[in-house]
Length: 356
Image (cartoon, rainbow, N blue to C red):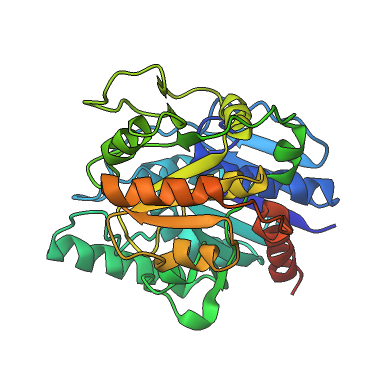
């Protein structure tokens, strides 16, 4: 029987979106009859399932590579003594997911130790991330390290073509496996009656994802309301129609999304960004408004929009947002097949890569 090793710093953390991808993969691989071992730094994981072993190894927080704030280096030093006690044929496939990313530097040693296919999974770009204000020297260092990581990988995964273009890896090795909504979780949500005019946002806000123009547009229309789950929104006007919540359990957020008419995505406009929340909105059959500081209908989110007529775009100013809110609420919802936006659909690609 094939045996899979997944090395992922975060795993099975219900409120940490970065852990969802590998958690889903591990559970589905185990359900398919494969033996799966997960090595993680997450101590909260309580998953119990046949064919699934979870090994929790704490990050000792030792010094990493100078100038790089990435926990993967010190964590992998903690993992290595345990991992290298295993036999060379213990695993048929090894998947290393990031971030953090520097655990991928052990690719060469893993290929020497094990007779296994090695897959690196970049959920975000490492070396060249436009959202980070890295110096020229830091970009050069990270590019060198990323190319070393990829040199020994058999396959490199990432979430969209825009991220793929940023990676310092041979293009022939790269495959796209999108994120998506977890169809099993979505099916467990009993939808409440939709609140007409309710806009919901789940996630972080910031300088390049400013929700204040949206809030003002909502307040200018008595038929609209807004609910936010995430970090604090500074300077938000007070109103009974504006509901601001801290981070709450993921399933509670999904329940609130199920009541809304519209799901909101705020983006600074970086093309590689394809936030996971858009898939949850689609899975729950919601209209979606994407408010951007960049070019409309562009990037990875633009590619998703081409496949779903229920997605609307707006520049991040009150006038444009008001117009798009009116258009979205007045337009009928178009029923589509949502399976292609699910994790299950993308998981089929992972199975194909493991099997070849």
